Image 1: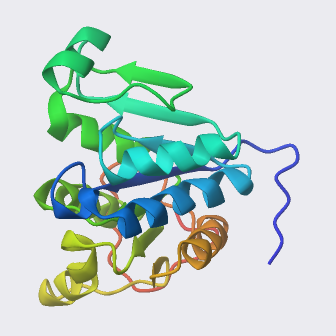
Image 2 (image 1 turned 180 degrees about the vertical axis):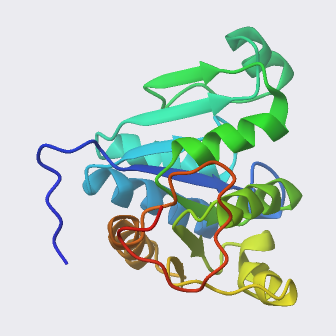
Length: 208
């Protein structure tokens, strides 16, 4: 499905995932993450991440390779704290927002600033981001085979007696993942009301 971007606000896709650990040492996972970023930029979307190292940073690198716009939302108060205390990068970003909010609150800002969210590997922090995004009805994309918690998110949803919704896509192919998520963002926009938890399986264009 071809969707025109003319005359409308740019789609913002968040990329969350492993900032450290074995997945971030794998060239295969790093390259898949770069490809996610490339595909986001090729579709004319803005990319958002937590301005952290690891797989989200690789996605930022990929987005910049294709001339995309990347916003990093940092938990730090300042660039000095970001670089020297959080040990986080500031290259491959067009703009870094220094929130001074720490990790947990920063995660919520990341999710709420994104029209849809992609998950790459990760651990408990990524699981927290996924839970927030799921409860708030965001369209979600999960890159399978990227290590960490992402390979178990579908099972976790089922273990929690919740639904794997129509606005969620799981794929091991970065190109397919971004393409399908881009479609879902337009087909299933998130609810517009704060704390409006989504409980049904199917919801369409006019929900909210």
